[in-house]
Length: 157
Image 1 (cartoon, rainbow, N blue to C red):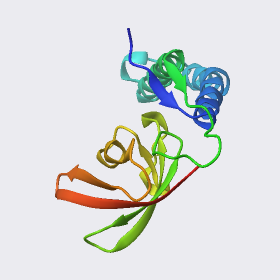
Image 2: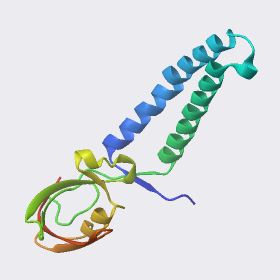
Image 3: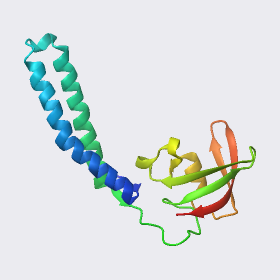
């Protein structure tokens, strides 16, 4: 059996929208590109045709990938009230003890992670270290650069 893929309602909605867009607009656009490229003549030396077929393969692969993720999706329900422990869907404010610097992370499933927006996966080193901890506790992150000690300042939804 395939591994369950944790995601929020928002993440599920975004994947469903992407799938719909790829199946409708994406497929229609690539079909038009292939049709146009065929009109250029000999397909054996037609780089536009090769490019369009490669793009078609990428779109179809992404459709299959999204369908598999949706099939194995485990929706993380909205957190009711203030969460007592860190779990997927929670926002966590932490203090890097060594750097004396605060960070805020939103713990999400791996398909939704976006480090540039402080959305980190529950499977990332920081996410794994924080999951299950309570406010006031310390978490030790095993990072390539060495151990990072984080103190959980607050947990919210």
